[in-house]
Length: 530
Image (tube, rainbow, N blue to C red; front, side, top):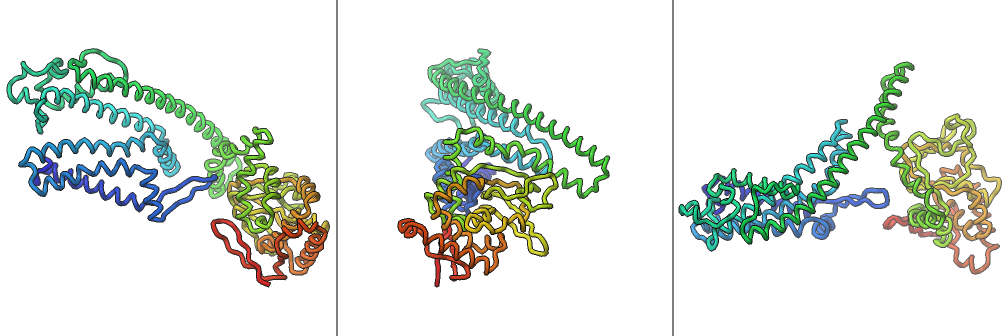
């Protein structure tokens, strides 16, 4: 019927097949996302998307699965139903349609449904843990179906040879009235050789289920040499799949148990919060913000601090190497740090320590401000903001400044090494996180010691701060202060050995030259014009 235009099933199959072809063409233009260094990058370029689909997607499985579509199209156009060649070729090409299952199996065996269940849970507030159970059930059903079709087709081929199987799915022995003389296949042994196709398929599915679960009741078994060979392969595949099924089900049950505990802890916490809200008559709008904090931040704070815990557990050589690997690329993404020579930044970056703070955390603040909990207001570290947003709250009528990672603050500690009278920036600013933030900090004691031994690094760091307009505004540096600091930089540079001075960049200062900055591939390139 695949080659007969008057058959509704042929038209439906043709339409579905061409929709599958269109889906492949669309996938060549669909963008993709890559997670790299705690951030997600979306690539929408058509050329790169096509290459990604061909190299990393299911293109080489999807392409052969389109062959039956073109074969059926040709068969319909030349009225191939009138020729045995057309019918046989169409039936043989049907097997290639099984390749389409590879995409669905790849989806089921990946964590895509786990991610989807989390997204649905966040959007609806519903518990979607049972979606994973459906995933296991569907995967089991598809595997059993493929094995059942293989087992049934083995008996059909034993009965049909040397002819092709009948296109209606009937046995030639039954059509010709030779049921008693038919080969001793499992269908004949089970007494269902001439039964309706539904009964024979159910028996094959029953045998496939027994094989996968290693039950083996024995009422259906292999009788011919061909069936024994196929059954051997099915038992091997079934044993592998059964092991996967057991492990996946165990993980599912463990996840159910852990999520029940996590959900129970969350509900217990929310009961305490709701009780406190009622007793204190907290306004509804404020209550919603409090509940949002516990659902978005508090429930995930443990996982967000995993990197901090891992780095603290590692011995110093491994921790320093990891910090260098993460922080070294950030140097070229932050303008004021791009002046520092790589050899200096390599040593400095190895001493950074990871920090994570939730929204509303005061990182450094001026006297009399902050949370009022007695936190030390003095700026004692340089902070490297990798991800998240920090607001610098200005005193007086000055506009607040938003810092979005990657960025650095605490530069006043470096300038104080150049001019001890330079004020700490916490006299002007109060730094507070407005989103969950990933930070790296290095204490001032180490910087003081390192810059004392390497004055050329101090010159480079000060030059970077003085040519970064964002840092000048953050530190409250006016033109006169900038000129005075720049003169100190030049004076310090003259004391350096000729070897170190030759390696320094050209003198820079925002009031001395026009500075043009461009950013290529995330790295700062500075061009000076006298």
